[in-house]
Every structure is written in structure tokens, then in C-alpha cells.
Image (cartoon, rainbow, N blue to C red; front, side, top):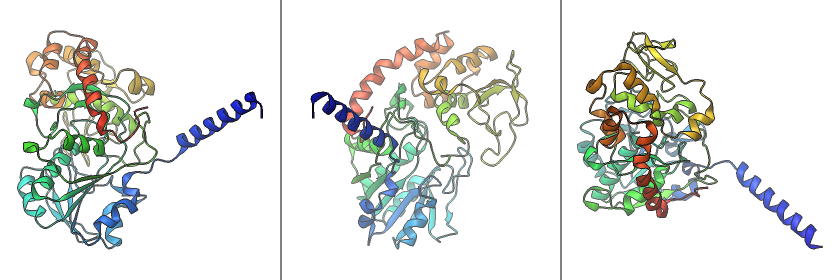
Length: 392
């Protein structure tokens, strides 16, 4: 075989292999049953999950229960085990109707004390939640609380990893820990570009748990996933993130939750629009109503004027701007409320004090983003030892 033909054959084989890898279905951690089911045998297991924790069409609790795993309790995050509760709604303890297993809510003021008592009766916590890749999305903080409890009570924790739908970039300020809260518990950027399994490894490795403790952690990784992929969620992660457009806009619009501006909770397009009854110069309008998942939405029953993002070209939403503060800045200037526009919750969401100050001083979105760029570059280097998947 001459060199030219050999070169063509090698190139063809390489391209065919690359194409095959590209087309391979992503296998999430929960589906890699043989990697964790043997560890659960004969153990008292708590499963922390919700409607996103699925193996095919079956909830992981139902699947493991049918396999004979001794699940002694279900831990539920914000929105509850079935994922139907409002954002911030306190969800009480209950019994799962299908399996008869007790459900203990980890979202509420007494969750810490309850967990301490429950942890004494379990050997392993199995964690399976679909995150959306934002520091303020509370599933990350829930994971941190559980890791702390596992470390203190010497309980093993297994994270069944899932892809990050916003895992293809890093953006936003790194949390200033003086603003630590339920929507920000570890010093990472708003968009950290990591899966929860990778973050669990970093939290352990950097000793970010209370008093520097570390938990006995095992991460079951995904197959065929890279951070360059744009993973499409098979199940909505919470009531007000109903589709991928809302998931992609969430990093830019969530800050309105700390202002008088509605992001469309109580409509069929939450986090795909924003407005307020007093905003001027806009013809587009929407009216929030009480509905499941948003029983008491901001600006309820008021006609809000503002911006419709339901038809924004995908490349603008996804790739060009990252976190886009122009929406927030335009609304701030339109309403002309001065100091009354932002609530203290804003700092907990954005994670630093300088963003509000710069907006109020008239800075542009690009000038504000330039302020956090070097911190993000430093974080990308710090996270590298903990990544499980290729960055490109």
C-alpha cells in the first residue's frame, strides 16, 4: 500500500471513529448500575433525589426498591421529591405513596437538626439530582449540606453524576464568602462549568466543608460526555425551568428575583421574559397568575410591560454573551428607582458587592464582566484536577 493510500485510510478511520464517538449516547451515572449496586447490598441507604433522578422512565427510588435495596429514607431538595413545589416553598416530611418510604425534606429551617438524627440510622447516602450548573441553584448547596453531614457521621456518600447543561463555559463572579447563603455555599463562579460530581470532588479536595472535614466520597461518572457538549435535559429540573431556553437564560435573568421585575413566574414562559407594570417604552406585555409551581408569583394579576426572549436566536443566548447583564441594566435604568431597585438578596445571588455598585454608577455590562474575568481564569486552573470529563 503506497503512502498516499495509507494516509487516506488512516484519515478515514480517524474521522469515522470521531463521528462514532460524537454520536454515542451519553450514559448518566445512575445508568451504570453495576458500579454502585454492589456497594448498596446489605446497607441502610438514603436516596437524595427528585423527579430528575431517573433510570430510563423509572425513578431511581422505585428502581432500587424493586431491586431489593434497603432504602430507609428519601431525602428531598427544594421543590420536593416529585419536583412540584414553588421556589422557596417549605416542603414538609411525608411518606412516599408508591413505596411507603419516609421522605425527609432538606429544604427548610430545621433540615440540619433532622438530618443529624436520620444520619445515625443509615450507612450510605446515594445522591442523584440533575443540576443546571449555576451556583445559586440550590441543589449544589443541598449537596454541600449532605457532604458535611456524611463527614461528621462517617456515612459514605455516592454521587451519581449527570451532565451540566450549562457546562460549556465559565462566567460570573466567584462567591465572596461573606455573602454565603442557601443560594451560594462554596467559592465558585455563578456559572462554574462543572458537574455536581466534579464539584463534590473539588469541595472535598479543597476542604471547603465545615472545619475542613472530608467525606467518604465516590462519584459514578457519566460516559461519552464532554464539557463542550450542549446537553439537552430529558426532564425539567424544577417547575419554572420548563425548557432549554429557560435553562440557558437563567444565568442572565435570575438576578431579577432580587428586584421588582418579574421573570414570568406564573406564566407559561418563566425565565424567557421580564417586565414590570411601570416599565415604559415596551409594547410586549404579560400577566402573571397563580398556578402550580408559582402560587404567589411576583406582580401577580398585574400587566407587566417588558421584553420577550422566547424567540431570541439560540446562538445569541448560548454562545456569544454568557451572562448578559444588559437585561438587568436596562430594567434598572427604565424604572429609575435608585437604591430601591435592588434588595439585599441581589448580593447573595451575584455573590459580590461590586456589581450593584457598578450598575448604580452607570457602568456597562462589558465593564462589569471585565472585573471578574481574571478570577474566572484562576478558577478554571484550580478546578482542573477535579474534572472528570474533557473540556473540549
